Image (cartoon, rainbow, N blue to C red; front, side):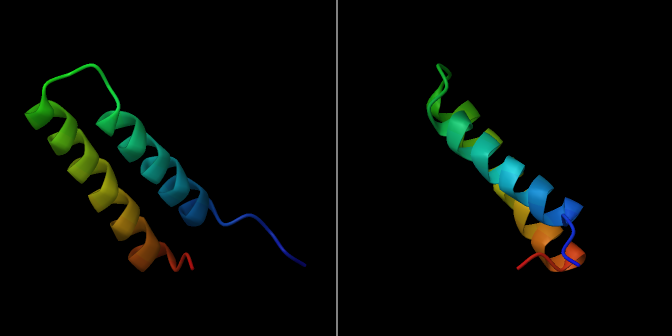
Length: 52
């Protein structure tokens, strides 16, 4: 039986938020820092949660 993997879902959500951060109406440094923060969370969730 296949179930939803919460870590994979959250990692995907953080990737989407990272891309949204790049297109936000903010300064470049703010957009880049938000992007990096969300991508770091996504990578951490993938490695810790076993998302593939």
